Amino acid sequence: MTKPQHVRRFDWDEARGLRDSGMAYTKIAERLGVSAQAIRRVLIPGEYERMDAASSAWLRGGTCERCGGSCTRGHDYCAACLPHVQATTVREHELQCTTCREWKPDDAFAGDKRRVARRGRHRQCSECGTKARAAYRKAHLEKQRAYDREYKRRHRAAA
Image (cartoon, rainbow, N blue to C red; front, side, top):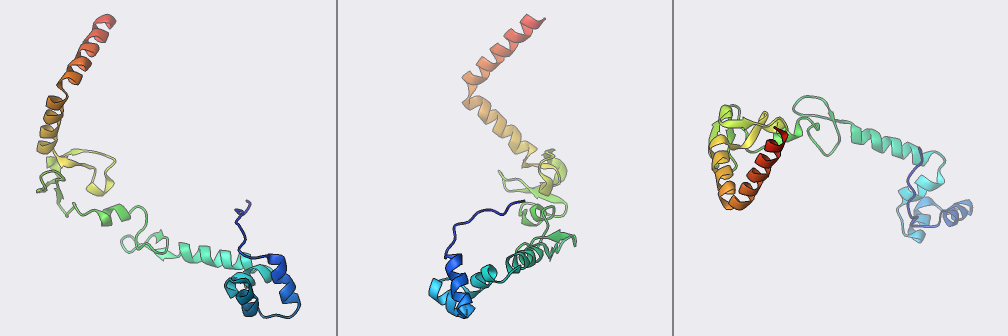
């Protein structure tokens, strides 16, 4: 696996020349306008790999607060638990309809397997979903009629 190529912020050969002449890492960093850590990363053999491994280990070292599984640092939850924690429309035995904003039992919502955080239930309650579909059909009446005509034409030809 090759490392991605980045634009260098300073001339590595110049840094090596200054170090060979006896200059300290911090002085080289000041002169070239970068951090001393960047200079050490370039000039000490194996330092780049060591720092990269330490950084990767630190990033992978988190523990999910909800299930105890592994997660990346900066996140308190693993990828499986995060949607459940972020969901603000879910209670223990109720879900909130995103249209009418009422809290209702789970079985007042249609199933939607993609909505893991909502226990596999749709965002709108069934009542609001019915009203929304009726309003759409009313607003797009001609489009619906054209679809119906085409559907009937295709099925008559097939019979």
